Amino acid sequence: MIQSLVHLSEKLRSSFWSLPLLMILSAMAIAHILLLLDDWIDPAGMTGLTWLRLRDPDSARALLSTIASSTITVAGTVFSITVVALTLASNQFGPSLVRNFIRDRRTQASLGIFLATFVYALMIMRSMDTLGEHTSKYDLAVQAALLMALISIGVLIYFIHNVAQSIQVDNITHHINREFHLAIEREYPLSHEYTNGEKFDTGRLDLGSSWVEVPTARGGYVQLVDRQKLIALAQEHDCCLQITCHAGSFLHHWSSIGRIYQAPRDCTTLIAKTQSALRIGPLPTAEQDIVFSVRQLSQIAVRALSPGVNDPYTTYTCIDRLIEGLGTVLQRPQPPNCFCDDKGKLRLITRKLEFSQLLDAALEEICEYSRGNSMVIRQLLKALSQLADVCARDNDTKALCSYLQRLEEDCRIFLKSPSDQAIAEEKIDTIQQKLAKGKAG
Image 1 (tube, rainbow, N blue to C red):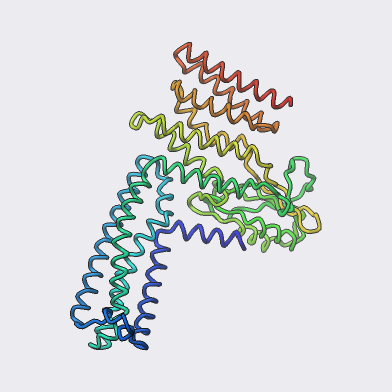
Image 2: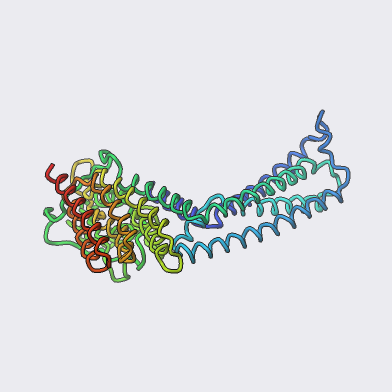
């Protein structure tokens, strides 16, 4: 249930219309409340508030009309600027980063305040035309419209500042890195005591020779795996579920999402409920897919290496942030893949990404497109040396050593300068020695 709510929240945040729509509905409610207050009390008749009194109903309508027309015009301008920013981001940093701009609450709120002010002014104008010419009934409502217009001016200035900041590559990588670390906190927590799960070699499990295949309900990317729901289903039907895909996997319509061991005779209902525990959509998301943010940083680094951009410093920044995240993963306990119920019976087996997969997703494309670039290779080796300082587990060490071997082969083939080759080989040898000492210790 909690994971479903998180998925709904993420879906609403990724929608550009959700916050503006909420603000519009709030403006309609405020308009109704202020009209009722104006009808019940006379705020302009109170001591010190006589300046709220409206003397000319036509002037009040003209003021509301000006506010409505100007705010909807500015809203169109805000929308145009947003589209331009999205186009620039897509062309320079990659289409997958458009999602980050759409999710920006500040941009959504900026558009929402102008639309809300427009709708509010229309609601008050309609009430004035309907209820008569008694301007004393609209004192508070009209003054609130003026206040919203003044706030909109300040929001416009802030919006321009925000757009100018949001298209700077340093700010973009900072926000992606923050999302990357949030994903690490979710998927690699410091403690797993509350999950009733542990990391185990599934090849050593004796689950029996019979199972029922669970086909996917549709093709697409796995966005969410509701672990608690799957455990509850397995406990309810007294079976064990094995999920063979992970968040971020792409499933074809003929693919399988897992197996049911010790399955009941009639599995139709159980298969349908198991399918509903996985959210499959047309696009990957960052909810449980830690590789999503990794690929965004890698994409920025690769585009910065293109001849049209030629910005190696952006590549250095992305490498540093990727290594920082990978180092955090290395220092965290491995996430559990086997989960039991309260009685200690195995109910769920999930598939978790190995460090080697994260390492390939982070650096493989950067290594591919930086071949022959000695400066980027040196920066990459410097970062890998820092990563080796926190690499202690055997499987992680093997993955890093395997990656270094591939990098060494590329350096021998693509680096033209003998001095560059010697420097690269020396750095690689130093890292390998460091890993060997860590493994021996």
